[in-house]
Image (cartoon, rainbow, N blue to C red):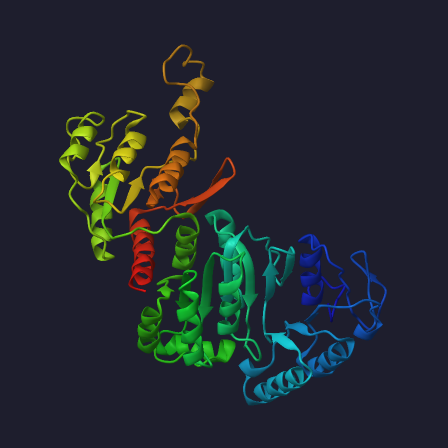
Length: 462
């Protein structure tokens, strides 16, 4: 940690603290000319004085000192360096010249650089939290490269409550040496990675990026958000990351042709990461909607149509079976409106019927709640000692429906995207060692389902 500091307002302190608190098991060597001790660790006056082999250096010192520090790392035999420091190509011609010199020297010495101007990296396998903000991401199968440090670490933080865990994260900074496509190529071969995620503003080699992306999506879904779509955004991107944002329509066509799943919003990045992480791919675009009330069924039907999903009619056999479970006045079609029935088995039994339909490739199931074991009204009546002896007033298993749906998806290999009527954001749920996500609205569920179908269709076309 080159530039380690005892000042909590400096990155040399905060990143070091994050690495320690993150429970990194390897050797940590702070470097500062003053020496001494810091956070229980011996501080070395220079890299050369570290009495051990070093695999990775993190540099936080000012830009004009980076070149000499890099040379010292090379002499120590360090081959991988993260340059947190800003003040390079994102600042203009002088900064670009300095960055070019740093990269030239690194390549001459056989070194690889992350950054400059990066917010750091995260690796679940080694518990390495070399990050500027104090974030402890969930561990799971998403690996993520972001040309924006802020957008990048924000997704790590959102993922904690939204059920999206990460295997690896890189804030790629100005990409003086290693670029977005290099990270994606590595992630596509990484056995711990199931889903690729990326935020980009511009590309230095669009052809190479698309070549890597086409190969990657044959193995794993690649979800991407493009920043700098407008003239104003493009100008902001150039001063932010030094990237040339380019004409968005060209990017959009290229993404589609390469099989990339484009997120329309930053929230979509996590929605799609969650759905690809936890739901199977549909074999087609024929969707059944299950809802507790008619209004949400209408909204869901409109959303499905908007995103290219079809609502097939139900078979006579399915309708007969549903007649046995639901009130006489249920909708008798798709969407299946359960007409606010209070039958506690209605949702689970209806799902079992729908998922067996040969003409249904996936289901959007609304009204899947896990927030309460007992309704607020029953809770209050219980506190008032008014429930003794009343049938059905016992505590409910809050995760029963979720586990049933996860079992159905595993058995039939069809996605059943769960929608809550309570949450205002996509929420991660963990039950008996199994993980999933529940969407807040049918619109977001339909959009996520359409992305599953988009990727499934791309793979089927070969």
